[in-house]
Image (cartoon, rainbow, N blue to C red; front, side, top):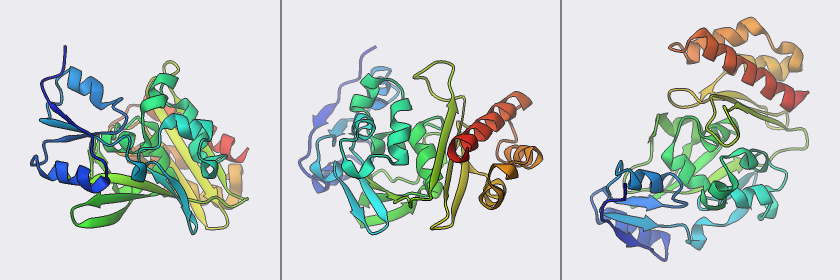
Amino acid sequence: MKAAVFEYARPGTVQEALGALRGHDGRAKLMAGGQSLGPMLNLRLARPPVVIDISGLDELRTVTRQGGMLRVGAAVTHAEIEDGVHELLRGTPLQQVAPGIAYRAIRNRGTLGGSLAHADPAADWVLTVVGLGATLEITGPDGVRMLPAEGYMQGAYTTGLRDDELIAAVHVPVASPQARWGYYKFCRKTGEFAEASCAAWFDPATGAARIVVGALDGAPQLLPRLAARIAQQGLAGLDETLLADELAGVMPDKDEHHRKLHGTAVARCLAQALG
């Protein structure tokens, strides 16, 4: 199948992109990498009157440090993160996660902001940003607003992003030398979306202690009691009963097989981070 007829716009600035969005009553679609939107257009699951290509906007392609945070532009590609094109991202959790996203051809075009805007529950970045306690910088007609990552995704393919807004950047914490990060996922084969996934972030310098499970029916979910215990006791604090109890609370509709799969992902993620 081929896409329905649409107009193509390539604005020169973020403000021009926002203007194009306002001019179509929320029916226009932004395209950053096009790796999710392209198939949806071809299957006619999306039929926008205009596609607004923001992939080349310089404003969305920079990486800078602002105090204790790294500001990563939304149009930075997975491959650029993987390859360490931006010096500030070398050796960070983002660079650790990027090589495991889909296939290289996808990573060459797919973007950080595009993945977050699509909000597939099994995607890597939606889990990563919650795991890191990141903040999304969202730009719209009323200016810029900052939205914590854990409050951004409201359900499968549903977010706190309005029709007249776009993700400009993601702000992630700068790790201290003592910080530890783990990321583990189960896939049926390399390159596919995860069946179960977990991210863990511990930084004694800031008191951060986060364990998050992904590949659920909706948004990633925190395991705060287990995270607090691990922060105090290390891997010795991995209590199977507590883990099972917290997983049951965040995935009540899943069967025992899925809970076991997620529990194993958590254990292996923590071993990676703290082992």
